[in-house]
Length: 230
Image 1: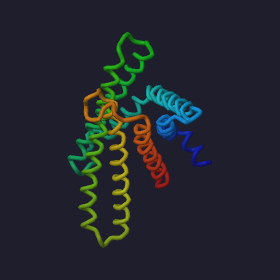
Image 2: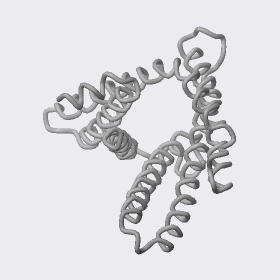
Image 3: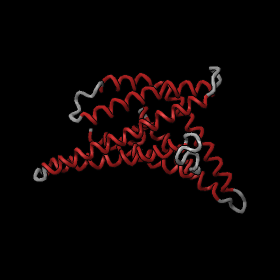
């Protein structure tokens, strides 16, 4: 209970919990809506869960209205990645940061258009958001794969140093989880692209919920692991 309270008291922790609940509700709601029960109770519950998921998603969108400065601070602290040894990892990270930075103002405009605060059509802006998110996820996946290659080389060089090998194995596990998380989110990003693009529009609600839940649970695991290490 104390761990959960500490998690909810932080903005990032609360966002991850809301995200997990959002996609979890969509997963369960989508499954319940697949086959109607004799009395229709499962279908009604499924629809309620899908509505809950939509409201939680909207809640996260509103909260992200205040994320621009924190993202800018992170991008400035990383800079051009001078601390990175590998140039491929450095530039993949820099471009990813640029895409993430551009995502927020685009999403703000799309949200404002939906709320009729600005006289614009939101469809184009939401599409741009999805494209930026998908490109960022793809680059993040490539970055993690490159890091895995570098870690494998390090493991081959220090097989006798058990303490260092154990640390490298933990890094490998963390990067593998990052690849799985980014791949799951990328599947959803493609699904939300216009029809005709790969598998866009072909996922049922439960599949979107499953991919998002996998990514969200990994995010919670990584946050908890980071706090434990600290």
